[in-house]
Image (tube, rainbow, N blue to C red; front, side, top):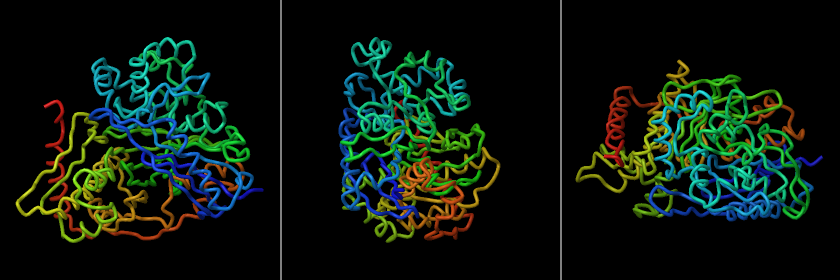
Amino acid sequence: MAKYVMALDQGTTSSRAIIFDEFGGIRASAQEELRAIYPQPGWVEQDPEEIADTQLAAARGALARAGLEAGDLAAIGIANQRETTLVWERETGEPVGNAIVWQCRRTAPLCEALRDGGSAEAVREKTGLVIDPYFSGTKVRWILDNLPGAQARAERGELLFGTVDTWLLHRLTGGRLHVTDVSNASRTLLFNIHSLDWDGDILRELRIPRAMLPEVRRSSEVYGATDAQALGGAVPLAACIGDQQGALFGQACFARGMAKNTYGTGCFLLMNTGEQPAPSQHGLLTTVAWGLPSGTTYALEGSVFVAGAAVQWLRDELKLIASASESEALAGSVPDTGGAYLVPAFVGLGAPYWDAEARGALVGLTRGTSRAHVVRAALESMAYQTADVLRAMEADLSGALPELRVDGGAAVNDCLLQFQADILDAPVVRPQGAETTALGAAYLAGLAVGVWNDPEELAGQWREERRFEPRMDSTERERLLAGWAKAVERARGWEGA
């Protein structure tokens, strides 16, 4: 039996493919960059063809680098950027327009109208989500409103909706599959996380025909196989998982109360809450973590819209650094920010604020504020936003976090992780393997075809690389957090001011 599993890790800024062996080690990987399109302020799009083409190119590249063929793969698992919304023609498979990316805020007026109409509480109870432009449902409504004839076509069953996982499965199988998994479905604002089915009341309110929606399956099961021409042979497609849930699985957070934080374009803190959804009273999301044959696992999540993207902004727009890797040394060259705070609310604020009208703010500047202080403030903003989410999570569950497992691009930054431990007053643990999102998808696919037997076996493969213990005194911690809270208030409600 083939012992290699390929993970397709389709993210916001790149499409990657990683081939893992039966011990969770990486045999080979390949990556293709992915463009973002900004038609106007607050709008973010991507080309659906580019999403599919770069992902297929990465898969072929990883096979070539590994010296393997399709027949050497036991299965393929997909981890994907979530909430990004695509609509395509059922008959031709052609997209009707660009994908609307999760970061896009164009549906803020529609969300406000829904909230004003009294829908917020019912939607939260059913979906575990808040009404926000972040999620897919209002994006679908926008497409049907703004593409001539789209509503009638959708009602006739001529148009299909999917998140990125569904789009990739469609393309990899030559259009044979129109499937998603419970984790991705739970991010659409259209899915009832209690009945584990599309919610008829919400579909009626948003006037989204059920015929557009994909079939919802478990996160770990064989959905079908790739077309032979895609990779040179048929390979079982055996897992789909939203990227952040994938990282939770890859970090082996299988027990209730275990949590991970991913520092990527955004920042995403998820805590396993077990077999029952845990409602939040503090601005967090209740979401499906994954679905296995043994049952469904839920999580609490705090989503931060801008994390690593703030460092990209320093590099690309302000030209303060030449590369993201330069940020650690520059931030470490000063002991603190000199009182400066950066609130990177470039597309509003996510959890626990959910303020679509917030905008970025750089405050507390003095004549002595230097480039290094601003760079350090950008790194610290990731830690502060994570602390906001974790405090809300601890309040919802009435307990302190024993440790936080971390991953993502910025998790290589020791300066950031030490400050994170300090501001949380909790240990921060970095694993040996950095590719936790892809590993989670690979694990789920491997479980479906028998490469691994159960999550307990996978937990035994997890290894700690470094642990960061808090060393800041409580007075300093509270002073810094109070300053951050003031900075956030300056940024909130800006667009409507």
